[in-house]
Length: 64
Image 1: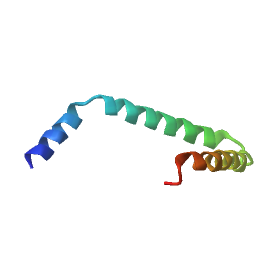
Image 2 (image 1 turned 30 degrees about the vertical axis):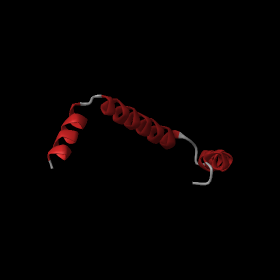
Image 3 (image 1 turned 120 degrees about the vertical axis):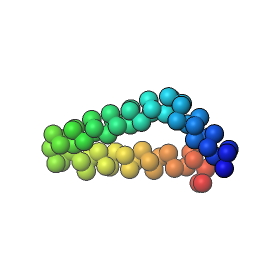
Image 4 (image 1 turned 180 degrees about the horizontal axis):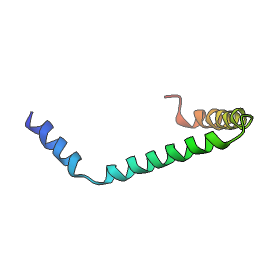
């Protein structure tokens, strides 16, 4: 139990994770704002692009 408590204290004091969370929140808010102002026909095009990129990257991962 002591090890868990000490690990939790180290995570609480570590400030690097805070930056990651802030950047993730910023990216999420920008993407939501962009989605609100983009025309409805843009969504399927972006989805197709991401699907193609994902299908190209799948063989690189080694098949998990």
